[in-house]
Image (cartoon, rainbow over all chains, first blue to last red; front, side, top):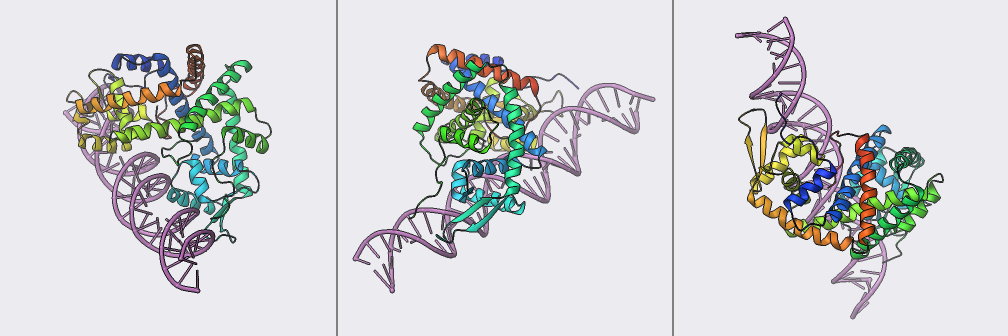
Amino acid sequence: MADTPGASEPTLEEQIAAYQREFQDLDPQVEQIVSALGRLNRRMNVAYGRQTATLGMSNAEWEVLKALVLSGAPYRLGPGDLAKRLGLTPAAMTHRIDRMVGDGLVTRERDESNRVRVIIELQDAGRQKWLEAMRLATVFEEDLLQDLSQDERGVLGEMLTRLLRRVEDAQPDSGGRLTDLE
Amino acid sequence: MADTPGASEPTLEEQIAAYQREFQDLDPQVEQIVSALGRLNRRMNVAYGRQTATLGMSNAEWEVLKALVLSGAPYRLGPGDLAKRLGLTPAAMTHRIDRMVGDGLVTRERDESNRVRVIIELQDAGRQKWLEAMRLATVFEEDLLQDLSQDERGVLGEMLTRLLRRVEDAQPDSGGRLTDLE
DNA sequence: GTCTTAGTCTTCAACATTGAACTTTAGCTT
DNA sequence: AAGCTAAAGTTCAATGTTGAAGACTAAGAC
């Protein structure tokens, strides 16, 4: 067609070089970590999205199922709790639940002991979907980490946990905005 | 009011324990890394969101500015390129650009040498906004990494880069979906 | 030169998320 | 008990994103 100017996405190395060019007082080591984290997460979300699509599901639904399963038996949570865990507004949660109830993945009922509350309960169909997604996810994750030795994995996990602790202590809970998965 | 059942978000440790409880054949080391990555990214996006809001901007606009700045002089890209780099559809890009043109952060003009193309060009106002955001971001990022020594930072950056390479080689480009920042 | 094909961006309708109002219920105060 | 206040969800209008269809331009085939 013609020449493509600065067409495709830069590599990580190019991106870091660009940062140094455009913003001098920048620690390249810090930037490498932050940029790699961001890109990695984006790629992973794309991969998860493909997998959940395979199962006739969206990542949005997968997130809800995950929160319910991880809450443990009896796999019940309120819309508000779910919203907080997923970083959504309660309004958005209402709509998501509508769809998932329609799909038979969860049920919605009033809490009779406190009628302000609503209880979302994971159904077998939902649990099955989650299991299938997990099986796919673990294959992908194992493949992702293939180049890291056992020791390296330990070190990486420990470091990330330390970073996470730092952020979570700083912004304790706060139903923060901004979409993305866990 | 009453007791809160399984109210607040679980800690990372609780989350990993829950995974082991609900899904036996799972490598806890892998899960720790993946979960920490996801949570970390979410918290970081919340933090960035607060900062950009401070500057009267959204993360969405910040992403566009970032892509333009990092593309280097003369800071021009087509809507399609931008969409690819940000992981958005071209349609969404059109609308974002509408708003940003309205705010004077960028301009939109037809490429006279190839009239199918459109050129989005970063304006001074946009560059200034990006700089302010960068200054805030670097403070936050430095604080985030405070607990890591120089050596640890090097190791972490190297490992993340290795992971990233693995994913990016696997899904070369592909205008993937799924929101999130870099 | 005309036709066909492909690429780039925009428009449009459907859907998802948000923020703000509103409804219902619970607990507290008096 | 009556009234106030706070909490939990839902509804509604406004905004952002998507996927599909449309408009326009360029390049190649014949």
